[in-house]
Length: 96
Image (spheres, rainbow, N blue to C red):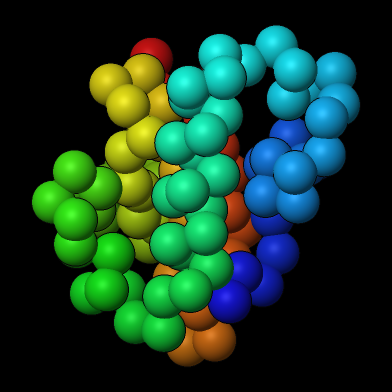
């Protein structure tokens, strides 16, 4: 279960709120992001996010060391820290 979100837009997306922050997103990206956030919320172990392979789960380096990401599409990622209690600091980001 997601412990907390890093920003309001990610939280609004997860809870299905239509706000200025979420309305500007492409509807296809929004649907995919919500699906990935639901998967993240349901995961009990980090390894569960390896499937489907399209998630492209990866450990991040440098300034994001200690965090992981899964792909929404080529442009967008969901970045999070994995804790013993599950994902925390969940952030939907434009990776480019």
